[in-house]
Length: 254
Image (cartoon, rainbow, N blue to C red; front, side, top):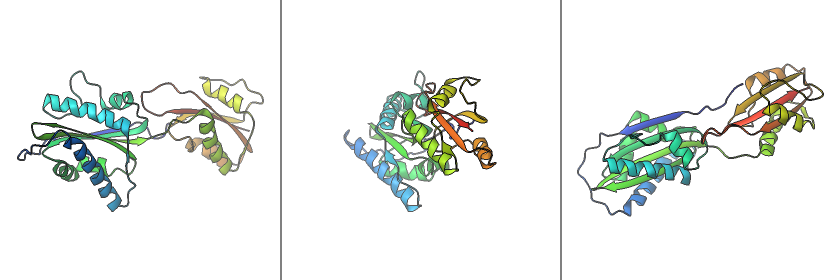
């Protein structure tokens, strides 16, 4: 069994900003978040990286944490009694294969972004090529901005049919014809061991992945050996693992 893109959480905090406070109106917090979002994408585009998409679910998670930091009047990635980043993002409704977080406190959005870009771990999160989405929240307290950026490699929720279509497309590209044994493959997918289908496959593999269009390397190696002419693919419901997108499939080779 092989898992692609395992859940990976990277976090970085920034507490070294000590500048004269600038008093901002409460509504300017949303403007500050937009400045940070635009700044992040400007940095990425200037380096040939794809834009980050705004994620409302991640923003909910970021806002809850920014509010907690403002109440505590300090920064951190988890306070006593508060869920960790993975749980916060999951509870907000986000679906992902990777997560990262930046937090900071400072006088304004421009200063915070600049400090993030001059801090290696924060810069790495902002410029991570494997991240495609971000949620940003800012809360003001006594003229200081408590800021949170939650990044993710956001993944879609796919139906069983779409999972099978994507895996089947890859199998076809490798030269195999698809059989009509979808139900047998689905049944095999849901089993812990053994196989009850007829005819029995010459080779089979059950696996989980965050990207159904990619096959396990061991499966591709067997296909490249040239001993198989057809395949059946079936998907089944994966166990719930918070917001981590985890597709479960079975491929039968004949």
